[in-house]
Image (cartoon, rainbow, N blue to C red; front, side):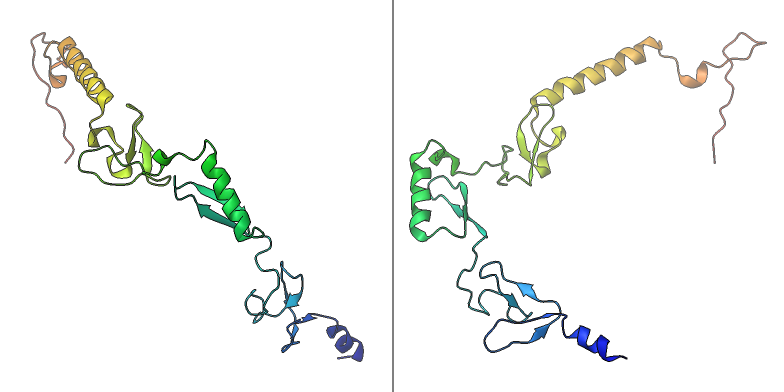
Amino acid sequence: MSKGATLDLLDIGRHCHHSDCYQLDFLPFNCDGCRKVFCLEHRSYTSHECPKPYANSRKVILCETCSTAIEITGKDGEEEVKKILENHENSEDCDPSKKEKPKCPVKRCKQVLTFSNNSTCKICQVKLCLAHRFPSDHACKGYGGKEKAAVKKFLVAFDARNGKDCGTSMTTSTNRSSTRIPSVKAS
């Protein structure tokens, strides 16, 4: 190994900016708050006591009146957060009736409907929980009508056959009598 190769290795990596560390790290971390470089051990805001923690982060606060989620940045102080909440409460968006969560309309079902566990019935357009999403599982108003139409269609088709069985329609060409040809069943 030549001396040139060892000198090149000294340029690789960065030293940790923590006052007690200064470790040479080949995969250093850049802090997005204070913009300094740190090793694995000192990369978190708390471990290197960052003066600007969570500068680019986002937070969500909940309105106590209507349970609406309001997104804020990490730069907002407590006074600014209070102003944002006050502005929201004075706006038309804050509606106390929104606080009560929607529930599945099926009798004795207490499932709260959220964005991930609800389904809209394609027939009656009612929002239901996943357990009652099929028309047969809830009192679907349009389901009975379609079911009756399907039964009626079946009965009309059955009547059109004039009571003939599928096996009796086949007759021998020599004898015009209704002699059955035995069907072959797979065993």
